[in-house]
Image (cartoon, rainbow, N blue to C red):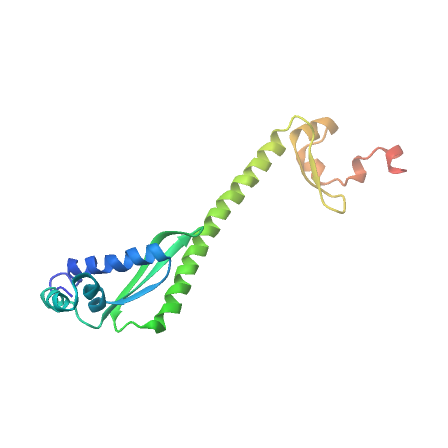
Length: 173
């Protein structure tokens, strides 16, 4: 940690970028120790020099978990702390799935609201009478064209049943 800012030096963040790229490309959770990442970049001998110069501790580790939406990686959930291990992988993957589910559910809710709005507009603005009733024949919803056709207000229609507005000769059938 930098004494002035309390953050890792930029070089450590650059080393973590490799883990990000790997997580994005594979779509899998990556757990990397900082020293392992730097060895992959610089090789064994240079890695110890780089780790010393940039104050990267051997126990520093990152768990990098991709966040997906419809199977595509759209972000990264990153946790860095000393001594992270495989034990934390399931927790990070569950967190990632919760975030993914919330993102997808939010999108589904937007689509549902749009569909409901299309139905409402189509129903209300239809030039022919439209009526929605319960299975028991109680009026639930009617459009203005239906009210005009029968000469009732919206409130009056809601108080009636389907049989109340059916012609007596048609009831006998």
